[in-house]
Length: 59
Image (cartoon, rainbow, N blue to C red; front, side, top):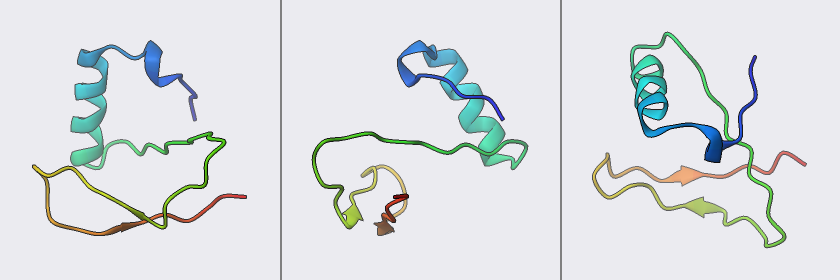
């Protein structure tokens, strides 16, 4: 498993990663650090499927 800072990934690398995830050739996990409480329901992208994404806290 590799760990990257999102700011270090180019737009082209991000698109490749999305393609690999879509064809199930890769798996990615996002880790978000915040001082604010994480919402229980995360709003999804309006262009994608109308799905409710529930957030589970790691800690």
